[in-house]
Length: 420
Image 1 (cartoon, one colour):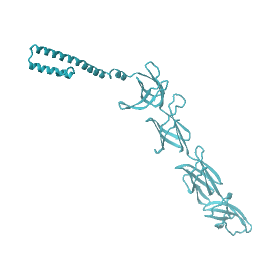
Image 2 (cartoon, helix red, strand yellow):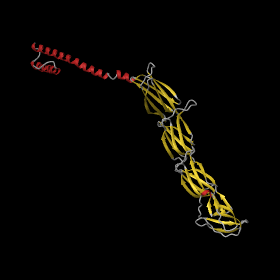
Image 3 (tube, one colour):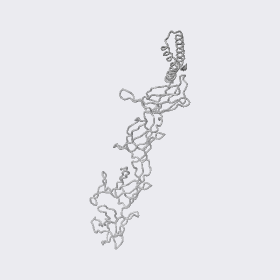
Image 4 (tube, one colour):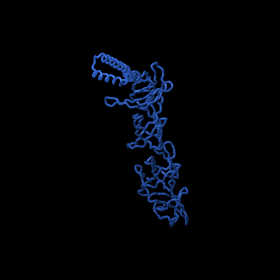
């Protein structure tokens, strides 16, 4: 009878039983029935019963035949439990595990183990929530275990000679990136939030893109270990690009970003609280600079504003009421800058030149008001002289009448006399 070892039932399909005498000569041969029994006739003696699967010996026993009897030959059939974990030791569920038989048999005594290629596929299973999967009814021999999660993340050769549990560490882990400013000392710089991080694989394909959090971190679980290309953009400027090796450890990326501390001062050197501070980036294009407004801030009660900026040239504008100030600087390290403010030239213009047209208009209107009485007086004087000349007979009536109507008409226009 053919039986499995360790309580495992063998697959009887394809098995045969060969009996050898002490000289190694085949004396009997048979195929098991559906219950695993083989009925053979043998003379008394000592024999070796071999159970074969093709050219593979999967069971063997020495038997002593002294009469009719029942002999059980245990086959070498086992269970293999595969547990998949990542580089951090965490269980990997829902990953496909392939099992390949690496044994190639040319005859009963001539076989080889393939190590440079995959052998015959035995089967595949998917890992459960505990990261495990079980392959049952395996013959003894060497197998290739291959774990796939999108792509091959783990391979191991294992020699199965008993039922056992096998742990395979797969090439998966977490990508932990932290973006910080350049530090002037041995300590880590300040975290940089809201950095747009582009991640590419070794073939240039986009893996993902994501913003850093308030602590400057980008964390992505379940990444394949290996090299990735990183492109980091912040405030519209590339602040870092390069290749990193992801192995599960935190990768700190130091970027050419610096802290700029600004203090607004009035003409007396006193701090200006609640002043408007505008930051303008100056980008060189050929022979000229292009000015780009980045953002506007408010100074605190002590006249300070502190912010992070990429390396480059900047204009810092401060404004508060009648005060304005401007400083141009090249930011190549953490810097403190004071912006002295003075009275805005525009205020002088507004004070002295804006009212000028109004003053001219007032002068013209006042001059017209003064001119009107003078005109009226002049015409009255001329009219009185005309009356005297006419009464003394020095002016003809026709000329007198014409001039009087003309003078009275002018006086009527000026509002100084009614027609008679």
